[in-house]
Image (cartoon, rainbow, N blue to C red; front, side):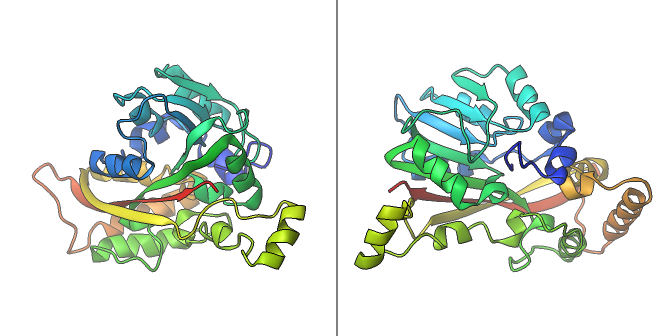
Length: 289
């Protein structure tokens, strides 16, 4: 999530129902979490310090706190209501902090790992990257992870069903110009790191513009499915900030389109009437130089 001082109206307003976010946003599959932490080199490791940026209500923080390794976590979150929801959970080994991606209350080189779950796209800036570099020790790892429902995927990604593609197309119409994972632009901040030719390195050293994280990024993804009733599915969609901000007639129109799309002939339902939802957990990582 963006920093508090620059927190967009969409983030401030769209995520104000922290309880709904905590209840309805998808959980991270255990297989994906294990693979992600393996690539961060912290599975089975003792005395690991983790800086988690934009921890939100703690959907991912809870998983870190429950690990047998007993990680020490500094959970940094700028949104007051989300931060309060996380603090109420009183997770072992977790210190909840008010801070921003580009201004964290964490000492230099404290972290062995930095994690951004469902959030890096909000603050994929050189300033935030510089701050992550500051709080990580040399050789530490920065990891980013997202749960991505098919209906909220990047446009170029394949989709499993026609109805999820229709819903994806509809959600894409709510473009407020703010950075989302589905825009697939968050990687640019890594690609735009300064070049490494010798002359430029000397110039960049003097200007403090050296590359801070390694390329290419490591990447992996794990597909999943879940079953949700219509109301539960709408509640999940309504946790998307640009949908949550809709008012009155706009919200009614969105619900109507949602119901119509669910009349599609390829919508799969179980005996409870729940709908089969498809998605993927995507994660990436890079070493701190």
